[in-house]
Every structure is written in C-alpha cells, then in structure tokens.
Amino acid sequence: MSHPLSAEELVKHVQALAQGVGPRPTGHAAEAVAQEYVRDILDALGFAAIEEIPFATWDTWGYATVTPNVVSLLGGVLGKLGAVGRLLSGVLSLSSSYHLLKSSDCSKQPFAFLYPNQKQTKNLLARVPAAGERLHRVVLVGHTDTNKHRQTFAPGMKRFIPLLDTLNILFPFAHGVAQVAGALGAGEKVAWLRKASALGMLVSLGLLLSDELEGYVEGANDNATAVAALLGLAAYLKEHPLQHTEVWFAFTSAEEVGCVGMHKLLDEYGHVLNNAYFIDFEMVGCQEIAYITDHSSFSYLTGYKPDSESVRLAEKTARNHPQLGVNGRSMVIGEEVGALRGRDYRGICLAGVGDDGWLANWHQYSDHFDNIQPAGIERAARFALAMMQELDAQN
Image 1: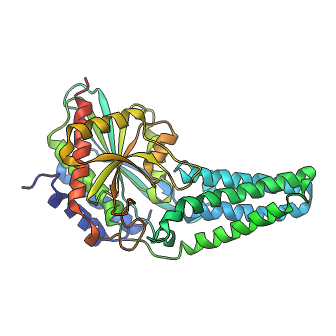
Image 2: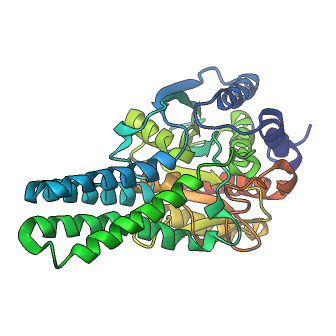
Image 3: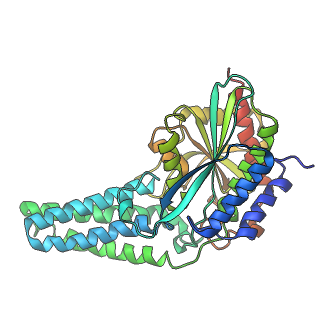
C-alpha cells in the first residue's frame, strides 16, 4: 500500500472531488456531496467522532462587494432631503466603505445581515489526540467550497486586483466625506467629489456585477488539493499520533464567500483554540510550495501577516528539511489566515505558487484536474507534518 502522503494517494482525493463531484458552490448540493466524501474517508480511517458545525450562509462573495455599493448609491437619494438627509447619506457611505475594508482582509462583514439567498452548510471537524501529555494543539485547515470563474482574475487582469479593490473602498468613502461636508454647509465646494465618487461607484458596481455572470469552477486546485492534504495527514496521524500535540482537521465551508466557516469555527471553539497553531492549505497543487510571510489581501489598504511564532516554526522546518524546497514569500492572497489574524489567533498559510508568481488558475475555468501537479500536494503535506513534528519536540 502506498504511503498516505504520497502524491499518487493524495491526487486520488483531488480527482474524486474535482472530477467526481465537480464545482462545489457554497451551501449547494454538490458541496454537501463533497463533505459526505470527506466524512466517508474519515469513517474508513477509524475516526469515531466527526463533528459538524452547521450554519447558514450565502453562496457568492458578490454580496460582499455589490451590497455596500448599492447601499451607498441608494443612500445618496437622502442627500436631496436637506442637511439631515446628507448626513444620513454620508453615514451610509462611510459604513459601506468600512464594510468593504473589513471584507477585503476576510474579517466579518458588517452588512451580512442584508444578504439574501441563505444556504445551509457546515464545517467538519475530526481530531487526533496526543499519544502522551498534550502540550500543543494544531488545527489543519482546508475548505470544501469553490468560487466562480471571474474575469477580474484572468491572467491579463489579476495584477489590477489590488488597485480595483482599493478604488472600490475609496469611492464610497469619498462619497461619505462629500455628503457629510455638504451637511455642514460646504455642499458647493465638494459637489465635484460627490458626483465623481458616485460615478466611480456606478462603474465599480457594473464591473462587480459582470464578475458574477460566469459559472462555478471545478476547483481542483482551489481547494480540492487542500482537502486531499488534510485527508492524507489524517490517515498518517491516525496511525502515528504525535507525542505531545493534538491535531484538529477542520474542513471548512464558505471560505469563498468571506471565510465564514472559519469565523463560525472560532465562534464555537475560539476559547479552546486561543493558543493553537493554525496551518491553512491553499491551492497546493503546484510545483512550488511556499509559506506566506506577507498577505497583500485584495487592496493596498489592507493586508496581514502570519504570527511570529508560526513564521519561526516554518523557517526552522525549512532549514531542517531543505529537500522539501518550501520557502517563505509574500503574495497577493486573501484566505482564512486573514480571519484568524484579524481575531488575534495564530495562523500561517501553505500555498502553491504558479509560474507567474500568483496562485495558479485562481478563480478560472482552467482550475481543473488536468492542471494539477500532485508532487506539490505531497510536498505541502509533508512540510506541514514536519512543522508539527518540530513543534512536538518543543517540550
């Protein structure tokens, strides 16, 4: 029997999810089938207690970007009702800008209560206890849902993502400033700013809506590869538990709509996991694997870094295991470590790096099984195991 962390074993899971199940939109029937696949594998491995954390969510991140622009533009009508109306309009626009700022780095979204189309989904949790006295806890993370094909992530467009997202945050902010200034008697002086920012929001809204027109992608790399890495590590650690480290396997949902699953996990178990090490797998089906030292997030106004303890652990692992060829690098990426760091938890991301230095086939129809490089999944899984073994030796 092949080693559970071998590329040939890991890629079987990717094929089962990407080709066997196909696109897995958040909260849709196909994601439930994928989650049942995960549960079946864990059952076969002998995991007796597989926990579910159910929750309601939405099924596309377009709500996170479109809704605040609509709120701000509709609020602009209040500006015609005098000083009080302009003040209320300004508050709505500034709130919209704040919402976009928070959603850009994967924080909780303030306007989420406005989103329609609620779907039911869940996180799956499994655990391997330490063989001896528990001194450490590690949470391995991989999400089960997939995103849409997005024109803004096309090869010729994706380099503009930080600029576009920054403008999307700034337009309602400028509109809010102009409306508040108008309420304070400076309406004529800032009329140009109010009109320009409203036009900017309209253009942004058009681009954001057009980005919602395509279908969902197969998600072989994003993120069947992560699920495969977690299942391989679950198989290995079930037979070879660490001496002093308890390992959690968190198969999260709703990552693609704003890391909702991670927030639900922290809401439920944050008090238990406040000292845990989180290792998130993102799109690791590439030849090059890296641990991310600086996440640009999606705009120039946001961004986050892993905690220093996790970075030191990754650096030590890279030095002690040079054959794995995993090194640190910065990247344009937003994922569940953003949710973790925003709430002051430890977290570091292992990600695949495409030939152009970006995530490979990110939110594109080309994210299918034929474009996966299985050796990268094995390298990511073995690096995570080595990190945990290094941590386990710290008694």
